[in-house]
Amino acid sequence: MAAAIVEVQRVTIEIARALPEIDTDEKQARKRIAALHAEHEKAAKELESATAEAKEQLSKINAAFKVAAHEVLGLDN
Image 1 (cartoon, helix red, strand yellow):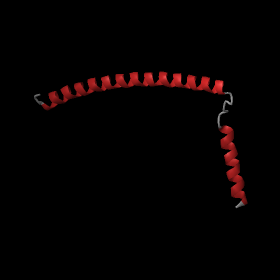
Image 2: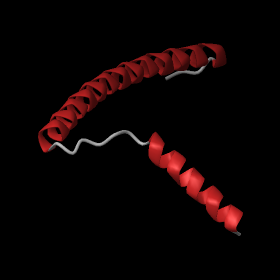
Image 3: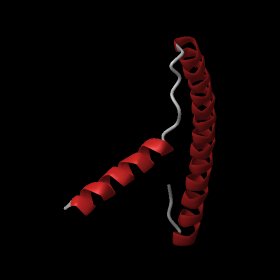
Image 4: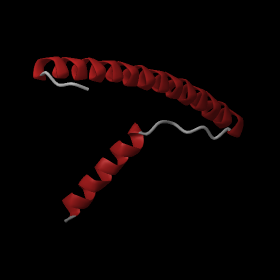
């Protein structure tokens, strides 16, 4: 049991050491938060743009598939 407790403590210390340092200076922390927020906004806009482009391409592919399927199957609209 003592070995298990020591192992848990070792793992806990490893996890704690892997955590990023925190800013105790409020001004620095706010600056970092603002930078992270700006980065998030930029990534969100890029994702929105890529999603819109993908939806447009999917729409074109679906339309082409529909035309091809109608031609192959001899279906009328």
